[in-house]
Image (cartoon, rainbow, N blue to C red; front, top):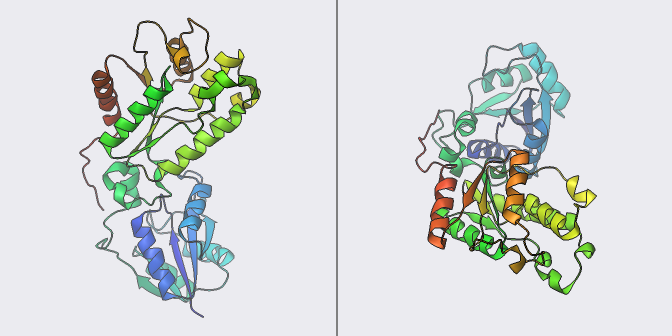
Length: 328
């Protein structure tokens, strides 16, 4: 049985890493992928291990802490300490070391293995993790599906009329060639036939988050969400008179931009879609809540064409259409 090792930072994993690891997987019978980690890394080791295990479920993925030990790409390292660290995490000594960097030959030497160079000139996959971190949108095609949610820009829409929010989300997604997230649960819309106290508001939020995370994998740079947990919290407070404890305890969701739609008429029309009391100013409540959490937002008003144009301009600022390709 032949055994191999791939060592990398995977900050983040990209198409070049996939090519490297799949090449190694097909060369040897048993492959170990070692993720070198440091506390100051911009992406957590837990996240990187999860990504690599999803990408390579049939290979062994482990991590090696290199605190106070420079990575070979930074400066000449202490090879004795690297050798000791690798021997701790490797099940057995590898026969082959695969790398797209020159220092792969040094790792092979200290482990008594054969070095196999894989696409060092970046001719097969012209990208690097450094370039992706600096400008992920310029290299979107090289970011694996499971990694994209970490970089996608998220836009949510709040409106007193959820149907209009969904229409705007769909229109924006179509114009931008990306995905949009509809309301996961329409249950609150049907409250005229039931009681708001019987709703599991926490489940509604969890469902919305699950839908968002699933669709973020297929989004093209930006994900348009027809609602968000803040909107659900607002509706719960308005309908119940107070926010359920479980809803407040959920982690706060990050959004790069929120589009706050005003009603079509001067008076607030929130009661059209939901059984709210007359005179409830849903938009004002949302604006106060957005300011309280420090979330960027743009007020969207006017006729449909004006609303769509305003929203599109705001979203496009998040994802510049012309990104300089920067390849090392």
